Length: 271
Image 1: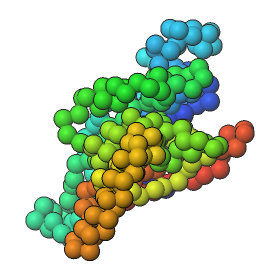
Image 2: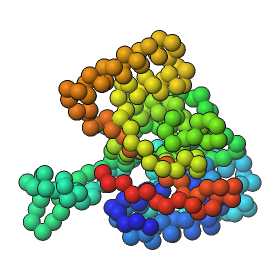
Image 3: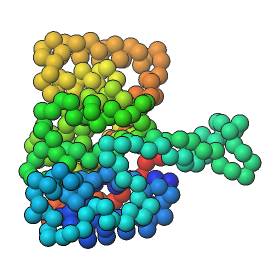
């Protein structure tokens, strides 16, 4: 496991979601040396979804222990919630903000992380919503007073590291909210085949392109996209693109193949 300030697990800590599986996973996460360990549940982690277990009590596997009996250790669990962490600034940031550095102590900075476990309904699993529920992510992000630096969800946004077989499995409504907020980093998993990293500028050109790809824009949108691309090139000639529109997407799925074998390494991001 690579070292770092924050370790993020984007869900599916377990295969079946039994109490023993979840507890073993939390114990392992808590034992890692990172100062902060962030965990968001996935659709396999059924123990953490009370509403799902009420509908499908057989998925308790005859166990009397519930999520209230879990020992979370040092793991921070986010479910449609956020946390603000204090972490050391990078060396480059310290060199450009020397007035904030106390002798003998590193400069500190605040990072807000939002986490949510929900994915569009597919089969019978935990933390799912109707694929056409356009209100889902508006409600999920309602607790935020300002945009987060990092968003962690179990599932991907549409068109970003979400390809499964011959179609895109990501949520377009999640993608819309990300365009609105533009976090610095979005971490997710769920779609094992699309493991990797993608750096994207979420500007008006990208938004128009995505609306065209979803069939939301029609022919007028295609023409408008051509105009926006031309305008973006003109802006690029005269000034640098806005850095605050750059978003890094990470699909952190570490398993793959028909048997969910461990195939991929954790991804390290420096922000």
